[in-house]
Image (cartoon, rainbow, N blue to C red; front, top):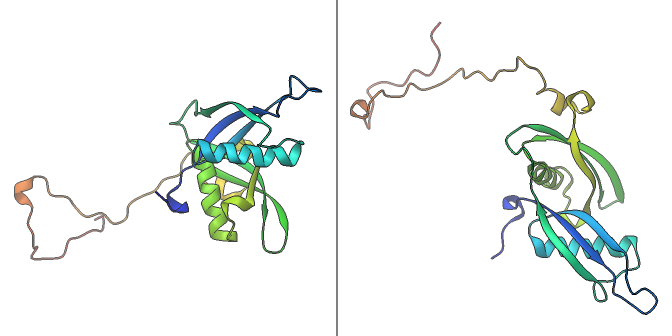
Amino acid sequence: LFRSAASMSMRTFEVIGRGGATASTPKPQLYRMKIFAVNEVVAKSRFWYFLSQIKKVKKGSGEIMSISEVFESKPLTVKNFGIALRYDSRSGTHNMYKEFRDVTLNGAVTKLYQDMAGRHRTRFRSLQIISAKPVRATQCRRKTTTAFHNEKLRFPRPHAAVRVSHRRFKTMYGTRRPTTHKSC
């Protein structure tokens, strides 16, 4: 079943593979990569795509030794993530650094793909993540990230409709409009 790109959530996979064994190299070197993909099939495909660019290894003669999903150690803590990437636009190839706040690296990478699709019309196949790692609050560069580092940051609700205290007081139609402003 096809899902739209907006509903995809990225997952982190650690893929270990190698080229095929030959007479000259009976034990070929192992290569390990951290790949962001929707599922294992896409992760394997991206592994061979990147490995064939770096080394003289093909999918046809190579083999995947292991593939495992990597999970976040603290998925309930909000963190800052710095992501270095390169992407192909209509005019050329560009390098970029972006910062996101999220509870997991997978969530930050999902936000990255949606942000790049919205701002630069970048497709999944055109974007390559060079590095993605947590960044300390003191090392954050982007104003959109540092704006949330204030300890006294509050989000007040200036308008809130008063809820009924019990189900028996609930009515389908009211005789007057609800007051949503806070009285001082």
